[in-house]
Image (cartoon, rainbow, N blue to C red; front, side, top):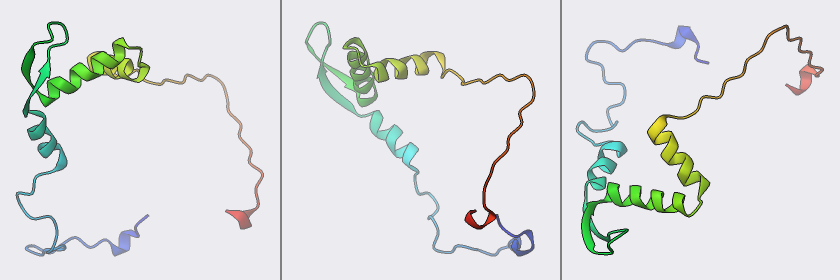
Length: 107
């Protein structure tokens, strides 16, 4: 944890990391979104005709195909995307008494 006494706010106009990320540099999310819009040719799953789809669509079709084959992870991904992830909730009522035996030397 940083020592609050060592945290000094920058002075107006001060640049703390002059060799940092250049302005206008695209992040990974922006780059991936661009490439997922790329059109590719695939076989239509039912008609087997060549069709042009985005890479994003081709990936979605691949996940659907895997789920149909019984891939549980693919099925879970589809459900999480459509309906949201299931929250892990733990309910507790009553008191909890915890006691740990340890040597201070080994911490």
